[in-house]
Image (tube, rainbow over the protein chains, first blue to last red):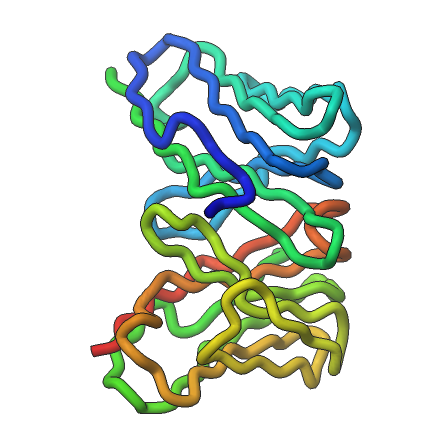
Length: 110
Length: 114
């Protein structure tokens, strides 16, 4: 089973609407990061969160790491077609090994 | 331009024919790793390297080999490919393990083993 659970697996949003993706771990996260992937292509780094309660924003994308450092959310405000893709959360497990969630596929409809 | 370069981008091969996927980074990163991505399973780490001549197994190392003779290169070797190794492969590099620093990913290699 996945060490990182992402929800939802996929979502369709109307252009201009907001959306939220969640990433949950059963263990404390040492570092949590979000990547975006266009289908079949490489991953593009979005944000990295390390401290409980930390929140970062870049353009219309905001990511938060909860106080207990076991869950993170990615929120997109006023979605645009350029936001379509697969969003993956990744985490440092503390043993030089990295885990990724299965990804959330976002479709933005005009 | 800072980048991770994988070659080839696409490869179709037959069962049992040895192949190598190359990975090179130009950022002087110490940490490099290989992942495979399969539908519904996300990215799974195959091998990683913390520095030259230092490599270790990830979560799914069976059927793969790696080497790190130079800091910039981290090739992935499939000695005897099998159809269950058909997948999308990514190489990544970073200054440190991913939890502390941003990881840069290559564009991916789509491998089909028939």
